[in-house]
Image 1 (cartoon, rainbow, N blue to C red):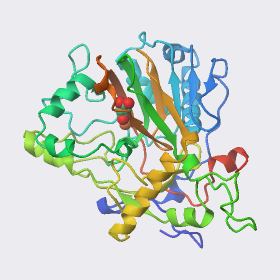
Image 2: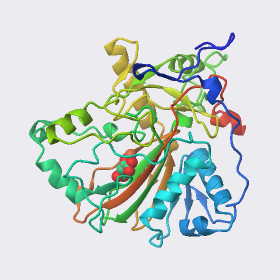
Image 3: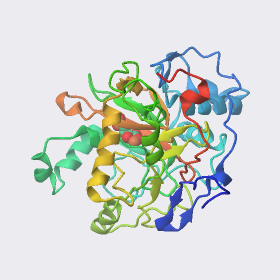
Image 4: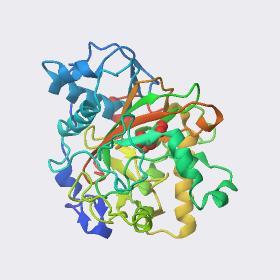
Length: 393
Ligand SMILES: O=C(O)CCC(=O)C(=O)O
Ligand SMILES: [Fe+2]
């Protein structure tokens, strides 16, 4: 996959025979037309997140220029990583939530054959239903009380309970175990406990920003204005890497439960037991064209490819260290009932905070997720700061 004299394009799903030529996928970054500029908002941090304290998603969906507004919302999500709708959104039905998730991707160039993701284990009879008792293959249900009961019955609980919990394991990008992982995810919280249960998002753009040149005359250690992020030589190396994102648990769960895996799952490329794609560690966001850390660490990243085991562990620890030592790149949602978060999985990782067992009260929510294209790295793409002409220190 070498294009002329350029570097090879890093975007393969080699294990499953899907090869991505980034030059074919490259397109102009999409530009915001300003159609939602009238909405009241505040940016959560200079780097990530935007909060809409009063806006109603229903109004966006029913506006006369709703497609334009949804496209601008999608571009805003891709630029800011995540947006929070803090006002109660209970006038939005679950079908409309699905419709919005579907349209965000559709209006911003998601492959035409892809749609909403379907959870591989949707056929599991123990799945938790929505509040009205029904299930929907495009809706993933969060229910802390039901999950607690289910967890207690799991055989491996005692061994696991003996180990302290590493919350680093919570970080993930949705459906990274698929050849075509999630693009937009839309989570609405329906019940919230009296405290806790926050969700965090980290900016993948920011984790791979080049904040200084180690080749400058000043020493790195005394460069007080530099962030703890990547040096150019390190990022060049990271850009050569792919990771295997294997989830063997889906096959064992189907076999143990005696039910069929869902297939296809939001894309003809997400089928059967193909849960071991190779994704780039640094990818290009298909909407903004900016580089982002992607399959470098977290729940679904099982192995950095083509390195020794200790190097694999070292690289994943390094990316986790980047996440935990750069909290200026993190936005945190403290949920209220019927608040919503919509994020781009193509430039963020997120993590739930499993602290709700410390208080009484259920935490329930419903999430829809779109299915994006095969992740790729276009070496010609830039970082967010370079593109926005923001200072690098
Ligand atoms: O429960 C949460 O806070 C987040 C759950 C999650 O990872 C998701 O909805 O994709
Ligand atoms: Fe998630």
